[in-house]
Image (cartoon, rainbow, N blue to C red):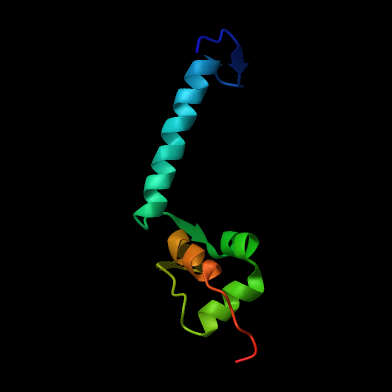
Length: 93
């Protein structure tokens, strides 16, 4: 598909095709990182994406462990969070 439109960013101008190709590469890389369990997110991001109460419950129950801890910061594997979020919860037991 030939498209002559251009995108103007603060630091550069690219054609539509260049933009789509670059975006596709970044999306493919991100998917690969998620599938391989390499993509980590901060605790704050986890709270925003999955809900603070759920994330704290998973941590308290031992189902979720930080993949990396640095001073004052915890990071979790996105694949672990997605797996926990996909499990149907029974709060009555």
